[in-house]
Amino acid sequence: MTTRIAITPGEPAGIGPDLAVAIAQHPPADTELVVVSDRHMLEQRANSLNLPLALTPFVADSPKSSSSGELSIIQVNTKDNVVAGELNPANASYVLESLRVAADRVVSGELDAMVTGPVHKGNINDAGIEFTGHTEFLAEHCNIELPVMMLATEGLRVALTTTHLPLLKVAEAINKDLLKNILSILHQDLIAKFGIESPTILVCGLNPHAGEGGHLGHEETQVIEPVLEELQRAGMDLIGPLPADTLFTPKYLDHADAVLAMYHDQGLPVVKYKGFGDASNITLGLPIIRTSVDHGTALDLAGTGKANTSSLYHAIATAKEMVSHWRNRET
Image (cartoon, rainbow, N blue to C red; front, side, top):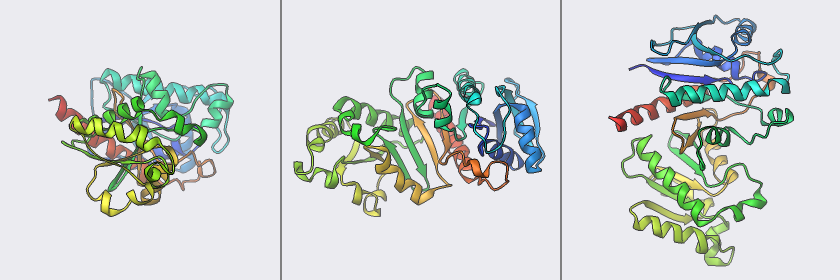
């Protein structure tokens, strides 16, 4: 069965359009790649890269596997001229519109999943639009109160309790209700979207040495441990809270399906050290499947032909795997 994947290239001045053009040269088998973007901008980038590109209008009721050098397209117009490597806040609204259109097509069932290219948060904010990231934006668009951000590479999945928060605000943000809900979403999606029948989840402590029995902080004893005990009684296989400095070792990881970190830079540096360029960003808790690349816009590489496609291929492969499990669940 052909899997239909929406691709949003993200910031048009960055490497996202380069990646879309590049993967069109060698599309994954049994996959229709549907780029949600501006035709003229993509054709300009393909010309600058000296790569062939045929853009055919997306037809909702006619699935097809993409051929070499071809992408299906859902047109979303850029708002101003695009110059590779040069940010233009006028195009920030185009970036967000492409995300809305892609998400709506997946919600409607016309497409199976969406894979997002890198956006430039600063450029969007410079346009006067409040934006903290794909995860929060898509959750709001899909009317989901609590999304869960997870990065995955070969042999490691790391989800986050808090995402784009200043470190000063992390401890006060972590409470029993939040942690319980995050763990429930992670557990459910590991079953439904990854096909893991009874997932084992390792849970990081917040403080050094997981609080050292209360001597280095009380979040573990007052928040994390009570939630884990409650969910363990409900049948979840949870281990923790564990010190983050020793959790990411084979002793623990070899027997686990995912890790829940308490904050962004507690867990993600490990994933990126292990698999940068071969990892994908996944939003859990949505009514759709969404994955993304693990890197930024790389403005200095835009239009040069030096952009690495490996993370985008990984994100597409992850999305296809999730679609397969999701389909099996529905049948």
